[in-house]
Length: 312
Image (tube, rainbow, N blue to C red):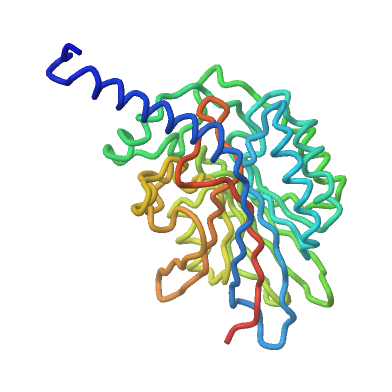
């Protein structure tokens, strides 16, 4: 075969075939290969009974995703003590009914939630390479800018009303409490920092002294938020947003986080330290994708069952 630009056509065809196979795997298999991760976090007071927390995040529901709906419904079989939903439930303006069907069994359990940008606004088609360009330029997605003019507004109010009717606590720039098995749990939440809806001044002051345990909840783990929560001595911060990097390099990891968090903490359990204080941070890689980039590579979709245990 003739060479094109100095590359034999056989080689060019081979590279194209490998690329096509990779895209087919990332979209057809891995993006639908749902996993449950299990993590233990030693944060409870001495003598407290362990608590099982199911974190779901970045569902990005699109109409017709039957496998995702069935998998989310099956998570109720874990019988968690409570559920934490860290936002970005939608990727379709018509997705609310299917989302509520998917989460219906989990809404039988106590829960709390915050929203992400894609709960409020529909996604836009973007070149995935822009994330790498923005990282090189020191920018991070919207990074606090208001959504662009003409953004599609999602019907998030109906989703909020259904969560509230189920008894889930809305932690949008506010605090809330749950009583579980004789324990008083306090929660402090923020609206999405990715579009600068967070208002930390409304919830500043740290954990409530009369609660047995406190948890901080936010969608996007921006450093300004982690700094505030950790300085205020929250023992545990739960977040999502990053998709675990979504397209990762095997044996290397994520290239981007879509916020200013470093890639070493793009998913899973880590710690964050500031001003002599330290918090545990758990970032969910989430179980969905933007409808315009329905692929994952070396980063399967997930939910996490966190078992909170007493400190050693």
